[in-house]
Image (cartoon, rainbow over the protein chains, first blue to last red):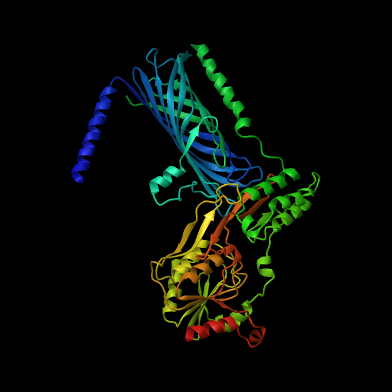
Length: 262
Length: 334
């Protein structure tokens, strides 16, 4: 077992070094962003009412730019209380991983319109503060869909700025969500086999019934060191239509720091 | 190149315009909308229509005809409360800022079978032990334990004391008469202190869709021995019609154990776990969304039957005796 573990680590390191070598001509950036998100949601498993509020929202993004393509790995976290118009409240937490790949073989990575694809993974959990039973509900989806990026660098009063907008639309994937009444997804406890139960709980995600799309527009000021400061506006919507439908809208304003890694 | 940026402005305004499409505004708080919202949610998620033979469509016809758009909040509350009363379910409430509707017929039409003052004076006395919510006293070498609400949390230390005292007794009486329920985890913890092995005591299923018989699979409910040690001597549980909800579950757990007898009147029921909801005018409500049956398929909603059926005798009360406790002591000392 120990021998196996050591070999596994060696293989991982070799693969990592090989990858690093392949990206020796690339640029690596780390983005940290935090701010507020105006979040509104309706979960019919709880209520027909909209719950809204300001949540804290943060992002940590790793951006790898090579000659022909750019890859973005973005971790997301949102948390805060939401209330309906009568003051009933729930606590809402979101965790996400949003990946983009953009291709720019025919154009420069620093400027222009780039097509690509995205993979979104989001876990949302909420606890209703007024309900004694069945007060916890959650959902998760993993999806893929097209993505678009527009980069426009410009100079103003001798300073370098960049406008960047990224959009994504999720088309197909999978989802797991709380059941008709309880927190556990339907089918999760029907059989004896854990894996089969898991498969029973998984449902397809497809555009038309389910929706997830978002936009990220950033204005960045590039410092002489190569790092940047910026602000980002990020509207997004999502709908999971199966069972008790869940709808969400979020609009976040974030301040950003970019550190150029290499 | 700048022209390409127009795509994003189109996308941006498209996303902004999606708000109304993705999240339409809240439903109107008008009387008719409130009525329909409540009726429909109960129609879709209530779990005992078939078991209680309730014609919910007829209920709608009867009550909807009385709804008028200009009716006041009090009149609307009365109407909705009357409609929910038809469910004959103690787990059904409509909560507003000014009142909470309920149906308490599950105990109000039956003998009380419990006199708290008598128990305090004649059995607990002045020097009874208080271990959290568990009040206990040694009576004729039998440990008498009184637990008034499963809403009050039992700690492991509380339970340890009771088990230790039980081991020095000839048996235990657990009095859960008038205990209206609370948290099921307290019931499971208390029952675990008297279980020698893991036993299935009931099966439960939950609504999985709007159809009358649309439920998930039956899932076993088990009681397991307490890790800190158990008392496996004789135990008698006293119940009455006001033993409800988590107390019915507790009675069913204890009834399954080979060393336990139930004595008194059957429990009031409450075998459906309530789910909550809210109406477009801000009022909240709850109703049963599950079914629980015992090992013979009998609904806990109808109450848990006792092994020994006994009512409180007014003549015994006159003598300063609770004849249920006396009968339990007698059985344990045999």
